[in-house]
Length: 437
Image 1 (cartoon, rainbow, N blue to C red):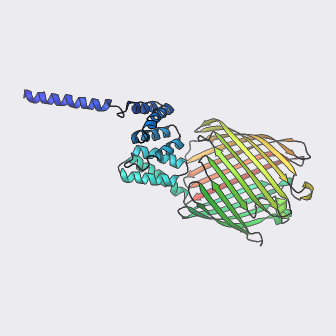
Image 2 (tube, rainbow, N blue to C red):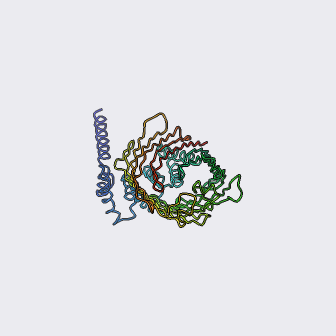
Image 3 (tube, helix red, strand yellow):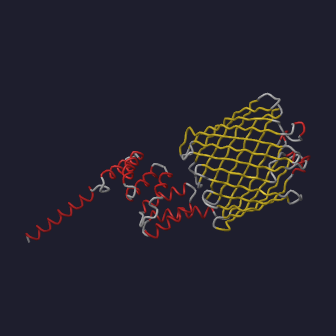
């Protein structure tokens, strides 16, 4: 009996010692590796990465250190660094689930959702009982299904043309995925002038096209369009988008029939083709954004219009539910035809500079998402042969995601602008609804 008690006590002491040893055991056999991970867990991500990098400099094939380096890089919000290092271990067998989940988040953040889903599917096949992997795969698969679902949209808007005339634009569009990386669409555009004198400028235009995503960097869009009432107004529009880096996007477009020519030009049967180039950039946290673009219109009345714009913005207050942003934009244009030789507004040279304040509020609501945007701008407009004049305006926009499949937005604005030295008050409004099936 005494021997049995002694053996029992010995076993209990041994088990306690083993448990204590396991709990107190460092994260790895390398104290420096252990220090790097603990430093990062304390919130000092860059310091932890520097420690791990010192190990990798000496032993670049150390999988455990490289794995933890990737994970900590995602904690630091540096997906570029994380994915660059993940490439060095992507073929390693039995990769841990806690590695695959943050890597898939980074792939998805860089518009590589298809790659993220493939990675997660591989992970689930290796770790079928891991709930985090399965939940992340279900989340990204649902996002993909929503993005590729058939969709129909309807938009109604107004456009102030020169000399106070008003246009109404109605557009409806249907799109559907037809191949894994190809989406087809059809649209109808109707444009009406509020003045019967310009009824000849009405458009009743249909278009069909396809968007093909070659990979996560290249996207191509080709559309054929025609007027359903007037022959000879057929056109083709081609667009190429390139993302050399997920924070940058570059684009080129050419349209043989530009739909955005001035109302008075359309009313007299004047058409134009348009060539465009643009670039967009944002920082990872969206605090800074920048865009620029150039357009050239070749009108059938022998007028060539060249225009350039650039805009930069800074969010001086950036929180999940409240954002205050300042936007500075510049626009300049030049026309080859003298202003007196064109029936439409056609300054030989002009420029606009604006400073806009934008406030965005995200509400807690019964909808999937509800955001309000408020705008106020003040600027200056200069036109050759006229003095510079102040311009200003206010606007509002509301966005509602009623569900994941229903999106509604509307906006309105009131501006005070100047044309040929004459001040005009402009009111614009638009309403848009999209439903996915």
